[in-house]
Image 1 (cartoon, rainbow, N blue to C red):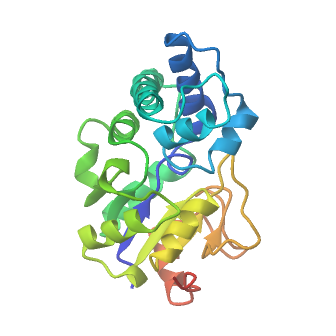
Image 2 (image 1 turned 180 degrees about the vertical axis):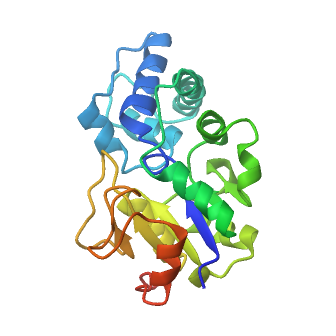
Length: 249
């Protein structure tokens, strides 16, 4: 029986990357007097690295004008990431980032139908709070039985740690949980925790033919199968006994 929905954040709940995080990173570079700018294509390639600070360090490795490996490089990455998070929060507060179609509806319906909900993301807690506060209000946390963020794990997606911790917090077996993800990296993280995933690819991610996702749909207001309507708790429960298992770990 389906008992819980576990939500990814960036790209899944909202299209946060191209016009949110990417722009905020560029604002941080400018604030620090650095000549670097991440265009849409380059940022897309960096998204294969999970975590904003990790993304910065990966980018630094290919820049001759970046600090050498060591403490100075780490310090700059942390400072830039902190400043970037501030700029991101400002963009969210200004209403420049909105929920993807069907997300808020499904969250509401899940709550009304008694499904537990959790967040399992490797983005920063401050970023999650900024976005969810804007979308759901100051008491948004009350609607989620567990919120796991980048600070809560030692290893980020595609490692399954954040999903394993979410399942523990929910006291839920993996077979009774459904992950909602936009990227194949996230789907793999869920699958390796034994959790089936519904993938709604975002701007930067296409659904791979080899994805271990249980179902794929353009967004939650579009059917993931010819016979389905929009994704809602009733449809999910009706399909649950026929779900394909996540890839074995």
